[in-house]
Each structure stands twice: as structure tokens, then as C-alpha cells.
Length: 316
Image 1 (cartoon, one colour):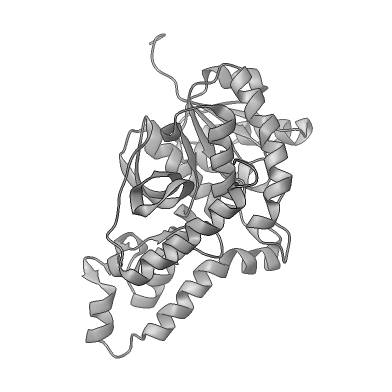
Image 2 (cartoon, one colour):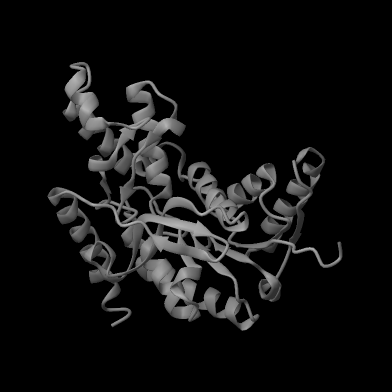
């Protein structure tokens, strides 16, 4: 038993998203060890105490403590949730300058510990910061993953499930591209239990294409609406991060729309962007290259172009 492999997750940033991620990891019994690091030591220590007090009711006794960057040395996954938050009226891309500076320091500290695991990035703008993490860390691209459009895809599936009256588990569809204003739905592959959405529109006059267009707008603008109402979004993204972490630790080879590096797939290269990818113990095993229709190709190209334009001045 002494030599049994223990999965260690280090969480950097115990704000709304980070603490919700920690809560989800413990409630789902996803990791064996959880280390929380935050500039606000008291907040992180308070979270550790609070989480440990519920351990008797958790499915798995996760060893949890307040730590330092030294604890990253033996970590399997380092999840970065630190950074400046999106304020009302601010887009995710408005956060670039602030968070690139913060990330340079964080990634440097993590790598100085001897870390050789997988980075999971949640901080916005997530595609830009995942690319930055890859550059700053020097790790292989497969082992630097962003939350990408996993949450957008979950929102899409939920809203489609409500519209068509079917469980979200049986709704299959992807949101791809930038986690932000230029993301797009892949309608050409969306289906309810195998029946294409396009077929459902033809067969039932109660379903209308314009209502589905409104639904996509709701998916895109969901974060703005939530921020307006309660100041921040955190439960949904925390559950998305936990889902990715679970896929890694259990070597699931789950297909998730994470932010990953493209090297020719979808006609794009040198960009991190949300696309369906196979996620397992070694990180991203491969990108699933969907056959997009002409409209989707144009939209995806535009989305990738927006990200590349932002990356250029920083990583030329």
C-alpha cells in the first residue's frame, strides 16, 4: 500500500472559481490529495478547514492542506484559477494585460518546484492564458489544457435539452472556438439521441430555427447575465474543471471541448482554442477534427484569428 499511486491536485487561486472547484473535487472524490495556494493565506486556510470539516460525508477521504509552490513538485495536476476577475461590462479579452503579468510569475514559481505534470487553466481569457502557460512552462502542448468551451458546451446541451424536452446527457452538440464572443455552435453535428437537430426542425413545426439562434445567443451571453445578477460565474466552470480532472485521473479518453493547441487541425496552427479533444492520463491525446460546413469553417477561422491577433504582440 505504501507504494500506491496517489493523485495530487494543486489549486492556485482560492477565489469563487477555485473554492468551488475544490468543493466539487471533494464531493465527487476525484483526487486523493488537494493542496490550496493563494496570496490570501487566511482565505485559503479557512477553505481548507471548512472542506476538512465535511470530510466525514465525502465519498473519498481527500487529504487537503494549505500549501506552497514547493508542493507542486509532486503534483499530477496544477489547476490555475488565479487572476483578475471579469467585471460587469468587461469582456474576457479585456483581462489580457493584467492576467499575463500575473501568470508569468505563477508559472515560473510552479516550474521552479520541479513540476512535471499537467496544467489546467481556468482564468480568463482562457485560450490566451493557456497559450501563455504553454510558453512560460516549456511543457509539451499535450500537458497544458484550458477549460476552453467545456462550460459553453454544457450550457448548450442544457438549453437544447430544455428546448427539446430530453435529458442533457442525451443531447450531443459542441460549442467550439474562443471561450468568448466569437464562439460558435456546430449545428451540423448537433443531435438529440442520434437524431440530427436539422431533422427535428423539418419534422416538427413547433421547433423553429430562429428560436435556436436565440438559444445560441443565450449560451454566448450567459456569463454576462450571471455576472450582472450575482457578480461572478463559478459553479458551472468549477464542475467543468472537475470533469476534466476526472477524465485525466481516470484515463477516461473522454471527448471534451477543452482549449488545446492546434497544429494544422481545422486549418489552424499555433493557437490554443476550444475544440473536441480526447482527454486522458497523459493530457490531450488527440484532437477530434469535425467536418464543418462552410459557415462553421468561416466562423471558426474568424474566432481563431481574433485569438491570434491578441497573441501576436505578446508572443511574436
